[in-house]
Length: 261
Ligand code: SF4
Image 1: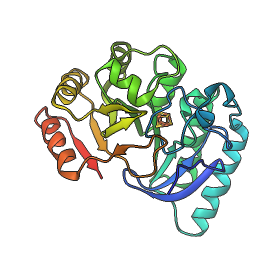
Image 2 (image 1 turned 90 degrees about the vertical axis):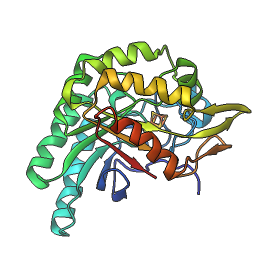
Image 3 (image 1 turned 135 degrees about the vertical axis):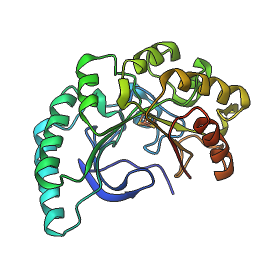
Image 4 (image 1 turned 60 degrees about the horizontal axis):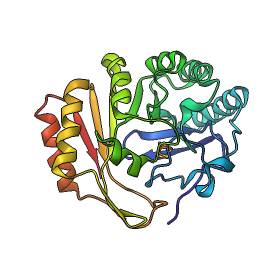
């Protein structure tokens, strides 16, 4: 196994641990990952092979996304194989696309026309939700799943490698404004990256993370661990039992939680 890039705008449908039969929509370049994080566990590998300066800003055009999505939905309708979810994911952070809001509107219209039972979902690292148009677009979809891997800046620096200014405090303040549609996703793992230990499953980590979740009160929380090859070597999955133990602590706060292993 190795990390992989989507080589097209529309991918699948593929069976997703979290979303069922999911049709992927990739707004990012086809030849490199483009993200304002560079997570050590990212299934797409490093930003431009570890050199973010080289990452090309070649977003797929809103027109091409519309045309490709409509074409694929028509095919799937004929095959009687419509997806459970239309999911914005792909080679990086979808909300970085300058026409993200327009594309979300288009996807919702196409979903209504061809696959009304499908949920429109966005996997996002949440760093741009303080932009009005990004927040407004995410409020329109069925499931915007916002990444929150640690309540400590130093751990986020290790795990997620923010490519610009980042603070957990600011992220949490923005997430608090998301309202009742807030869904949080957290990746749990441990190991080393370039010889530096990283572990967001320690008691200190989980307690801080729970404290923040208590403030955020998301409508749902998804816990998961590594499933594919990671760009950093030396990372380990956590066990299903460990994920479940963390999930129980979340349930004790009255928050709905699912864990995927
Ligand atoms: S936020 Fe998502 S796309 Fe970006 S580096 Fe992390 S895992 Fe990859």
